[in-house]
Length: 435
Ligand SMILES: CC(C)(COP(=O)(O)OP(=O)(O)OC[C@H]1O[C@@H](n2cnc3c(N)ncnc32)[C@H](O)[C@@H]1OP(=O)(O)O)[C@@H](O)C(=O)NCCC(=O)NCCS
Image 1 (cartoon, rainbow, N blue to C red):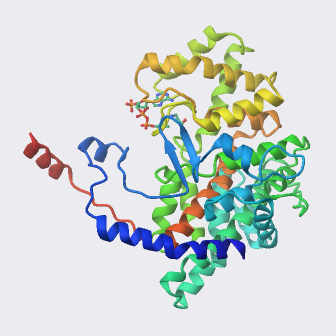
Image 2 (cartoon, protein in one colour; image 1 turned 180 degrees about the vertical axis):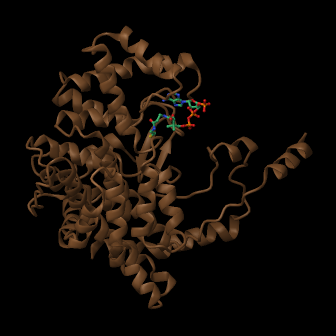
Image 3 (spheres, rainbow, N blue to C red; image 1 turned 90 degrees about the horizontal axis):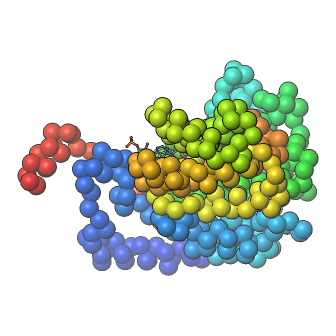
């Protein structure tokens, strides 16, 4: 398999590089930790390493060194389509360089070979109560697949440490291959009377998702490619990525680790924010009617939200200090294909109004929109109006990033994670000594 060969070829150099760095420069300080950081969610504490993506506070995400616009331009695309193959993105994450069209198709074909979802997964999903959240169904489906883990089996058979990454790669390909069908199944089961649309091997991975969702507008295939690209990775400290890494560091397989990451993604301050955003936009619309040109009413509504002690979903970020380029890519998509859509226009107007309000309020360090501020309005345009499903799509995409990271973490022998905790009395003592 091309992915395995390309990763294997790089490993001696990478392992030597890391070993040398740790051996020769292991005592060099990367930063210091303050009491506010200990109590403040470890914000800005540098304690993780990944070479797959990096979030620059003022520039946004780069995947393997490429910005979002560069990737949308350079990654291979299906004939006649505007957005790239996700197989090409996975290749980039795993191999580190841009794929040719054939290399992107190799990954797409691996996914086709491995895509069959076992019947017991659907049975497990169906066994949950009908009002269970779609993220519960999705997380359960991924966990249910754990019995397929090749890593877990080979570990118990005594595989050598140097080779751990190989079954991790196999598991990751097997899992990611099945995600579009599992997600679309959950959607059709919950919202379309279980009228399931089977996969069609003629589509690429993301196009097949659009097909199985039952959206007839062909442009939705491109939106799916864009969506899955944008949500895939955002360096390692965010909740879903860090949780997956932490769980995998105990040598759990990718099924356990990714389902834990998905549980983190389901929180309203993380992946669930896209659902909250759409709810907020719909409330704005209900309250002000068509206020897509009425900034004053919108301003009032935003202040009411803040004064009631709530956050404005989709705005702010723990690292970014500028409009998220993932927001901009989606804004451009909407402007190009449906600039007159009501909800889209409203989301665009919120972008004109909310940053000033957050600045005026003076609490949020970043008043700018993140990826979630607009993604729901694009889905809504194509008829995916069941907003509690949006985080499932985020999850499909996020497993692309976290699994690539998990493979590399295992290839480089990253150890079990175990930061140190202190008591409040100890921190008080440290503070007293410092003053
Ligand atoms: C993303 C988020 C969780 C980052 O949290 P953070 O790193 O703690 O953010 P900050 O350091 O800027 O927070 C400082 C203060 O500003 C507030 N703030 C941040 N973003 C805000 C927003 N969108 N609306 C209102 N207040 C906000 C915080 O709640 C915090 O208030 P507090 O001091 O009363 O606790 C936060 O901006 C947020 O809750 N945004 C809305 C939810 C969202 O969009 N999540 C998706 C992220 S991709």
